[in-house]
Image (tube, rainbow, N blue to C red; front, side):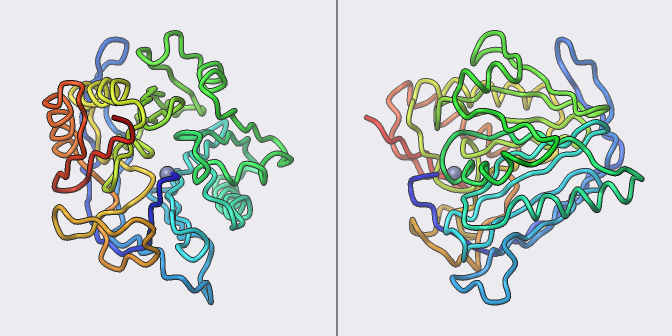
Length: 307
Ligand SMILES: [Zn+2]
């Protein structure tokens, strides 16, 4: 984002989710199994300030159709996470990074590999964003002239129109990548156009800068509180294997974050959060009753930017 998040770090996380987990979906969604196993890598250390010998991204396959990318610290202290989800008909890149790095080359490489493994020559690509801040959209320009690529606009109206959200932000929507449906959840508060994506196949919920192990900068406190409440309600009615945000700023030491602007984070918190931290956040926000104050929780900090 823009508030100085520094970065880099090492973390360790290892989780294996059962092959078949029953998902409890509400309303239009009936319970359905999560079809794909999930193994989340431990260390996401993004390196230090030197780029010597360091690739622009660390890219790992969560499974064959889902990739997690982290931008190297030496290219930008924000070292954001990007996600590449692939369906039968198209792929979706969630965020384009903080700039200063060849993101289209990285994505092309992953998609070429996927296409080769699946006997395909290519696949269409959608570039969407967790929100409109610069450290998540700076790579967009690299995709503008890429063939078979749609770059979703950054403003709320464009996001709403592209995903077909009837009432923003209370309605959810979906995008079908071809045999792979992602739920699109508007979650303004950090930024007006913020969205989360839920992958029904893996149960991963991508939460951008709204929920991650770090400083949750809140611009619109009322909207943020409602968004967290909606996320919590979603989590109560769906199987979420991991919440994956766009940064890591906390250390492995409870209640402690790295100073703003930190580049090298060799002892950083794990990437994934769980229902427990979301429900704790929801409870903390509710307790504030609209008067949000900076609040340090074990794995993250609520950081209002307005009175
Ligand atoms: Zn950010």
